[in-house]
Length: 256
Image 1: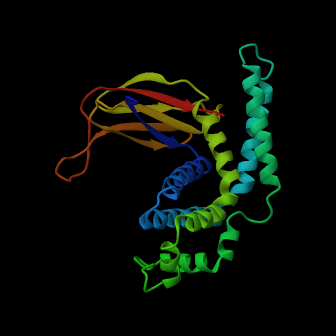
Image 2 (image 1 turned 90 degrees about the vertical axis):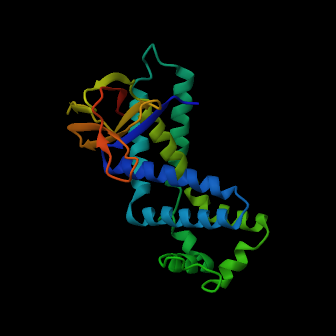
Image 3 (image 1 turned 90 degrees about the horizontal axis):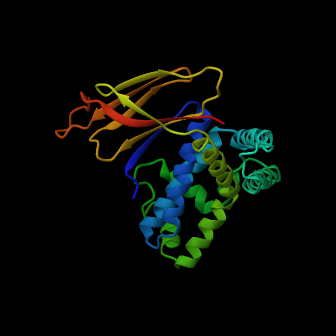
């Protein structure tokens, strides 16, 4: 079991969207394997959230640019003596194969799902709180009561076009998260402020805090200056307050 809680803070909108999708994909996988009606309802709701994000963003183009950028960075360090050549070749192969599959994808990702009349009906009613009851959508109710093999097959079919996108996002975020080493620091009276080097393209901040410390990290700022406040949760429902203690933590400023 990990002894730290890690708080992440994206430094641009692109990484923010990637992390949101990463979380949604993880939740979808969890509920996909569940066998109850509640699991399948949750999986559908999450898939709708994923589709909404894809409707609002040109993610295929953004991800392809990111994959190409990471491949260039890895090729630059290929001749370094400290690099594991075999591991590097494996990573480059993963990047290239994922890029090829995305380039081969036709049309806007996610639109295929709406070709299903059932899914269209679910999407339309889901905007209404509790709007997918059995009396609202008897066809959905019928589907939810089908054998698990049928429900699983449909969900896998609806989510399949997102598989390569998920692989790409996992690769990109993994590179970014492991691009730098953590620095141990102290936040005096629960407060720490710092300036980022403008000559570096920082993508993400990670703040690791021991679980034994009774507070959470509240991060704010942008590409140039950031602030971390360590807040103590209230036990009576009031707003959290900044800790008066000196808080030990680790800060990682992730590049790539």
